[in-house]
Amino acid sequence: MTESATSSADAIKAAIEAQRQPMQALFDQLHLDGLDEPGVSRDPYGAGEQRAHATVTRAAKALGLQIGHDAVANLYMTLPGHDRTAPAMVIGSHLDSVPHGGNFDGAAGVLAGLAAVSALRTLGLTPDRDITVMGIRAEESVWFQVSYIGSRGSLGTLPDGALDVRRIDTGRTLADHIADCGGNPAALLAGRRHFASGSIHAYLELHIEQAPGLVEADRSVAICTGIPGNFRYPDAWIEGRHDHVGLPRRFRRDAATAGAEFAMALDALWEDHESRGIPMACTLGRFHTDMAAHGLTIVPGRFHFSLDVRAYDAAVLGELDREVDRIIDGIEQRRGVRFHLGSKAQAAVGPVDPAIRTGLASAAKAQEIPVLQIGSPASHDGAAFAAAGVPIGMIFVRNENGSHNPHEAMTIDDFLDGVTVMAHWIVENLV
Image 1 (tube, rainbow, N blue to C red):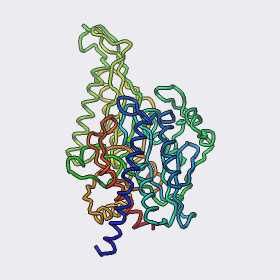
Image 2: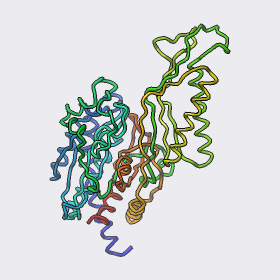
Image 3: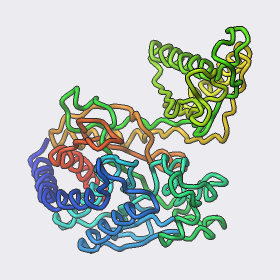
Image 4: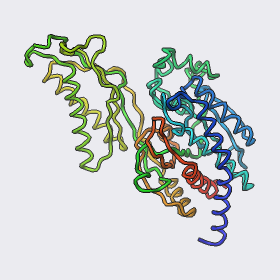
């Protein structure tokens, strides 16, 4: 590395270090915004997410960023560049959380964008194009059981019927919730989109890692190699027949044992793929008999479950979809039951742009921050942008206790390492 390159790297690192106290204060406030012991609950299109958006908006205004919103009520915080007609660089993540989740899932990515553009200001640098930090709505699909509501809403790719789905706790439609938060569901129905085709230069997201890879390797930062796609059945059930507990096995149409066989078949499918080095995952998030009718002396005639299957390759995901159907067909024939899968949700695989991935790794090397190269175990808004043809990149930050729980444990030191890599990449590519 030349002396001038070393000097530039040091200046970037110092500018990010100057963000330590303001970013810690923002994280502390976001925790209070969603405080719902245990953990935080920043409910999408609800009070928790609204408070978080207000907090981040105040911080962005203090930095002199331009504030905007779209029909799905996403938040845009823009640092103007030299050429305002050029496709914008978007840095984003979400501000909602799962119920009783942690403080860093999603929010870390929005604050990373603010820290990076603030560092540019500190360095006296103006990017060649606008850099927009995006506070994305409703990424956590547990609430509406639709993936990437905010990001797909901005891109005009919300699935048909999405505005009519109901939030699991309020029973009110997504359209109603969007309207409550200043959005315009009628414009979404009419096809309005914030991002026209070709209007985004690239999308970059920082996120806590949701697996223990970085903890195990004793690294603070990783570069993402890909985001999995998925197919989901949020409200599936198995129809059997309620019978007396003494009924001989050959006469039974036991929905619970059918569910158990289904679970074990999925696990065997996963084990087979793992043995062949093909990454995937499947999860039965809900898995229970009918609480209104089950009992100690009743053969279960109804069994409920949800299913999430994910993979990093579209062809693999398609084959898994067909394999699940084959497993179900066999169980139905053997056990005399019927599977009712209900509505199906899907999200495309999110390929990471090779040039951005290489550039982020080079930025980490220049900053002497050792990194891993890992695939994301989870879905992220970046996949929605990738599906729309936008080049994407992702940075993961070490997180001690997993995600979607109150014990997320990202440190400010590790966060600043991730932001330093991001800022160095921006300076190298956009200034």
